[in-house]
Image (cartoon, rainbow, N blue to C red):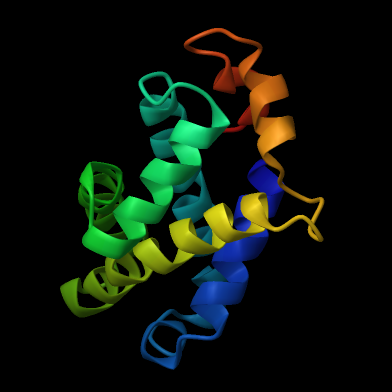
Length: 142
C-alpha cells in the first residue's frame, strides 16, 4: 500500500509546478518518500476510529473537501519534517501541505474505482482484519 501512496505523491507533486520546481532535484525522491510516509502514518493513526474501509474512504473524501482533521494532522507534522530534514522554505512546505487534500482524494477515488484494482475497499478491509488497529499490515512501512 505504501508503494501506491508513494506513486500518488510522485504523480501529484510532479504535476504541481509550484511545488515541483522548488524542490531541488537531488532531494525530490527523499521528499516524496517523506510525504508518503506522513500520509501512510496519518491513515494508520486515523483508521482505527473509522469503522473499516467505507468509513476511512468517506473520511478521506470529506477531508479532501473540507480540510478535515486527518489533513490537518498530516500537514502539521509534514511541514516541520520537510523544513528540518530538507531545509525547504515555508513557501514550499506550505505548497506541499496544500497538495495533501488532492493526494488523499486520489487515494479515495482509486479505492472507489471498480476499474482500478491497485487499491480497493476489499483490500483495505482485508488488511483491517476486523480489528481496530488492523491497518498496521496494510501500511507496513515507515
